Length: 159
Image (cartoon, rainbow, N blue to C red; front, side, top):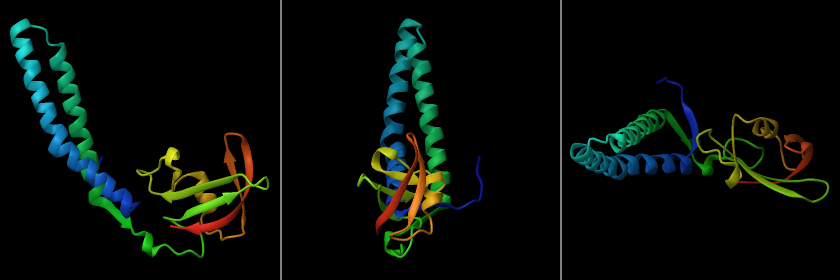
């Protein structure tokens, strides 16, 4: 579904999506065409169309992803880390948190398509990001975690 809604993302995240789109259109698309051509040759020899069905499915998925990325990138508003203020938590902020037990946590607030908890990147739309937005160094914030509510102190803001 194509909409006119702008999509916030960091300039780094936008570049990653652009690279993925380039790879899908220039490399993967050609690989899938070759794979489908080979599957058609097998079908013509054996009458078995299972490889052809798999190749068509992979090709369809790739084309869907290309369309999806093209749409998102056409609406993307890349926010440079240089424009992020270090006075309070906002989109693009990297927030270093600490519990009273000195357990640390570093989170970067990014766009929904960039979010990856394994890389400590959380979506601007997440409850944790919403709880952090507008806070400053020294502020206490409560976050819901898998282990229940945890209280953190913001000890540093960076980009």
